[in-house]
Image 1 (cartoon, rainbow, N blue to C red):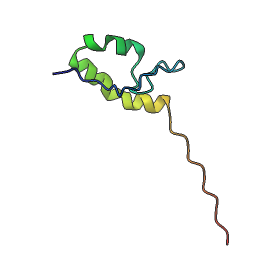
Image 2: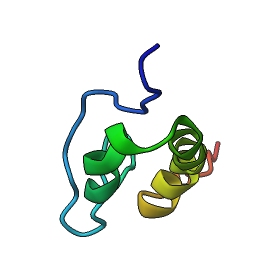
Image 3: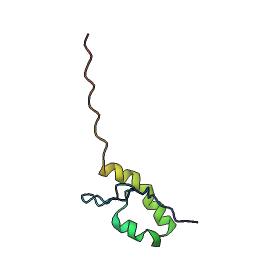
Image 4: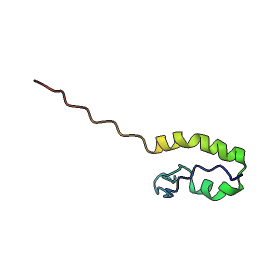
Length: 69
């Protein structure tokens, strides 16, 4: 059975955050991934959505102008 991986093949390390823009892992996590236990991989993967959301928050939507008749 292959190791669990969050990789979506969008492998770009952001120079500011140090995170992969595709999966949210750090370069160190990516490098060590094959040596980690499945439990450790799953633990890291569980935190990736929150990590990505904190690093790349969604912009506030522009207010819709009021329609006047």
